[in-house]
Image 1 (cartoon, rainbow, N blue to C red):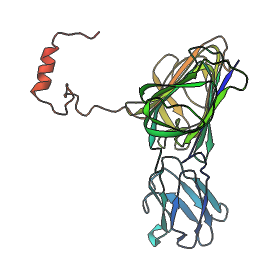
Image 2 (cartoon, rainbow, N blue to C red; image 1 turned 180 degrees about the horizontal axis):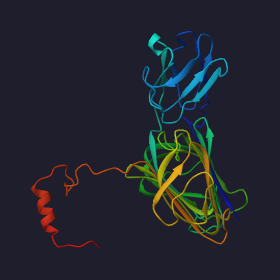
Image 3 (tube, one colour; image 1 turned 180 degrees about the vertical axis):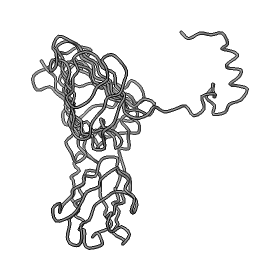
Length: 360
């Protein structure tokens, strides 16, 4: 018997719908020049008249390279930008050809007044896991248990709080490892305070209709504005672990013989070299991986790329791949041994007290 778990993350709530805002690029101005939007909305820039224009994000006349930079002319009359989750409160934009003439604007992005949270870690084990970027700030997760054992678990760590809208809770138990307490599960909205939670099988008799499904406010767990976007992740009989560590985003995929991994990325600002370690049945035709079993850099190109592992490459081999994005945080004051923010005699005494000790 398989147990199915499905949950979807949507931009501000489970019932939020995207709006479309149209900005006309006239001879030397945008109309309107000020917009009020929300994550998941769409902004359409339309070429109307005049010499060729651009829609470029950034402070007036200085492109920031973060969000958009598109031509607007008779051959490319429409450019559409989807407001991503986590967009700043203000996204200024301008036309590179006519910025000095005042052709500028600003997009004001509203933030949710509730459900302020940060997904710090997600882990799944004991089944088939899938994640898909749906667009408009929505993401879909699913989890099929291959068998009902103690290894069937999905865990997440949050900061802040989150309201989860449960659609079906059959066969589901929730445990608070830290923080919490674990709320009582029921259909409808359930609040999870900051903590480390684990979803697992509740041990009741099962039938083919048992699964759980829920919806939450938007937070794209597998991407950020500074890193490549994971558009889909699918594994069978493998472990998935995603976590913030020392200022970095670390993704780990591990599988035994007979398991599989298939992931797709879309690197809008690439190419880039990211820290990587792998061994076993791992392959990519688009990403240049380092030497097997040696820590090195993986070159991720601009645009779409993918990685396959397990039975999709060689069913006789296990696999492990670890990809790390971002720079590790550096200790600004390594001499502060006791961590009180000041280097003084207390740190010297701590060193003397440990004199002659060796690492375990």
